[in-house]
Image 1 (cartoon, helix red, strand yellow):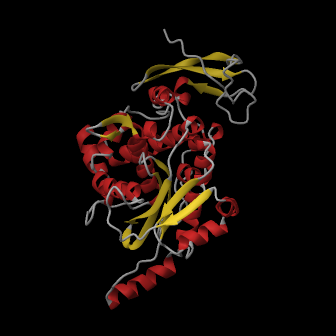
Image 2 (cartoon, helix red, strand yellow):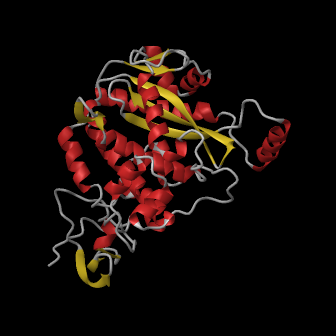
Image 3 (tube, rainbow, N blue to C red):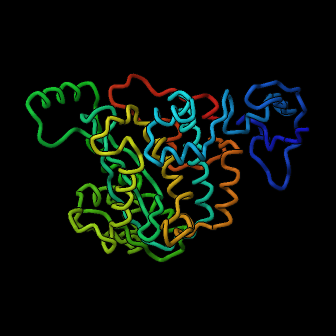
Length: 376
């Protein structure tokens, strides 16, 4: 017998939409059930306040799917350099189904990270750098700006910026680039804006840590100090000595003593773990938003599932970074059982762009499709 009770009303505009731990949701009526091949008999309910009907599946990450795919296995395969096609062949599913589940997992990961941030107490400095890849073709390179803990290698934030192809090119390549430049307009300040949004997360880390100051390490890219100056809060804290911006040449030896070791290490992990970022691969991203969803899912696995050091440190990167171990374990038990809701999740600007697929993809007309339930 199913004993599930809805935790709140599924309609965002309803007064019973926000869950209350001290006052369980009781303003609902049983409203029959329906049979499915994937989940068996699914009970339905009706809110007595607004009349909205919903089911058990409404509160599950697999809402509206016709087949169950193991998210833990999917994350392990994605982080083991398997392409979408390879994953699909291994489990007998289409690439569209795999991409759909990665999108769902990415939203779950964003909500999970948002909740975990409220219980973290970091005790480390930060390093940020740009990971270079491309989407659609090498005429559309991108910078993925990463904010990483210098001690834990925990990734606090990631943002994306599409760039203009640079470097040596033949005349034919230059002419093709000129044509593509007219078809897709890039933001000339994309790198500065992206760094500014990611560096803004340093303010939250500083607040969570309770420390008087922290150091933000970058390379000597000219856009970084400009972005700090352009951000009023960052600039003010820098002037007060609470955010100490330090830079080092990106050409410095990439050893563990390098202040940028954390992001250099993550660059290596991304190159070997995510198939679309492997050098000279035939597997590459075609859509910016889906590329960021895959990265989001991978970073969740990196932060919370992967041991900090495989041989000597069994704790995760999150635990090294100061996250409450019990809070993390409790959250991981329910992440694939309870659906994440946009209306109940506090997201940063970069996280919201990933959730809503708000980033433009080169040469793509119109915005990306986003299921209606994903914006509830």
